[in-house]
Each structure stands twice: as structure tokens, then as C-alpha cells.
Length: 312
Image (cartoon, rainbow, N blue to C red; front, top):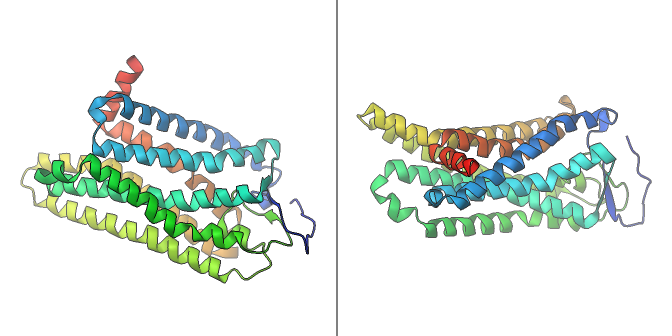
């Protein structure tokens, strides 16, 4: 483990990212998994975005929301994974003070944005199945614009205090971050000050943002299921469920991985510290890689658009 000299009385100007403290000699082997996943995530999302842009048949609100999800995924990937790979390959552990808190800001803002986008997509499916006659008048391009504004402003205003509270602390001793990324608590605990407010605000903001999204998404799918089960036609029910299948798979994976990370992080010494660190890294990589693939495979219109694009 790399040791940092004491800096008592000196303001820290950069941090050292140690990644996996107990795996310094072997952690570079993880790049064999992370690098291909990064290429897959970026490639799949760019193909999906280009397909939606090129195919006029995909210029509909449902696919615009999917494009927003892809853009968020790309930003999350590029914010976290390249730095992790640079640490593994070239031992580039230093990150500037400003760069660290910029990374923290992007992570804390765009992760809830992904959750809010899933909520908007769940509402889209709810209207399509429960109120099909009103769908064209409710889910419009203006709805997508309003949803995008809501996603940005809500999460920006709610998560901005997290990096601000962390940046205002006095970092005067160790600058070694035992993590692959500038996570709020991993950085804040290096300060000389009291971080109880930082922990409290992160706890409240995460559960209020992601928790409320999850409750509303589950509520929408309960209403969808009730309508589907009341339909007399089995074919209509199957078709309705198939339109929601891709979305539900990705939502369950996103929140399951997130909840596992939260609970393993709270378990403390009962679980090796490398486990929550690895889960945190993978949560910024696996959903972005999985989202466009699942939609591309299960959504016929997108599949046809990609095939048409490749043929040209």
C-alpha cells in the first residue's frame, strides 16, 4: 500500500487513488474485464444513439428517453473507468483536488439522473398500456423536453451540496484515498474536520432521490400488471408485457446492484473492503453496457434500425 507523508499544516492539493488496498500486486488483472466492458458500453451506446438519430421511425418520445439514458451512461463510463484503467496500467494514482471533486459531482448527479430517466420511461409504459387512447396527447416531444429539464434540475440541485460539503473540509493530513474513485465518504474521512453532516446529507439525498424513484416505478408496474391481468385477450396481455420486459429487466438490475453495493458498504469489516469498491466500479460500467444491448435485442424497431444501419 502506498503511504502518503503527513501534511499537517499543509493544504492537500492532490489525492492518491490506491484502488484496492489489499490487491496492489494483482489489481491490474481486473483491467482484462474492465477494458472490454468499457469498449462494449461505449460502442453499444454510440451505435444506439446513432441509430435513433438516423432512423426517422425511431423519432418518437419513447426512443428519445432511451437516448437520454444512453447519454447519461456514456458520461458515467467516461467519468470513472478511464481513470481506473490508467491506475491499473500506468500507476497514474494522483488526481488533482479540483478533478477529484468534479468526478464526485458528476457521479453523484448522473447516477440519480439515470434513476429519474427510468422513472420517466416507466411513466411512458404506464400511459401506453393503461391509457392507450390518450398516449399520443400525453407522451409528446414536449413531455420529453419537460422530463429532461426535470431530470437535470431535480438531481443537480439535490446532489450539488454533496461535493460542496466535502470540498469545504480542511484536508491537512493524509491524501491517500483507498478507493478507485473519489467517492464522497472515502475522500471526506481524510479531512481534519467533522464529517457527520456529509454522511447525513448523502444518506438522506440518496434514499430520497433513488428511493422515491423506485417506489413510483414499482407503483406504475403494479398498475400496469393490474390492467394487463384484467384483459380478456391473452395475446394483448403478452404484447403489453413484452413492451415492458426490457425496461423492467434493466430497472431490476440497476437497483439490485445498487442495493447490494449499499448494504455491503454498510457491513463494514464483515466484508473485505475490496468488495464494495469493486461493486461501485462495476455499477458505473455494467448497466451502461447492458442497457443498449437489452433494448437492441428485445425491441424490434431498434433491432431493425441497427440492421438497416449496418447494411448501409
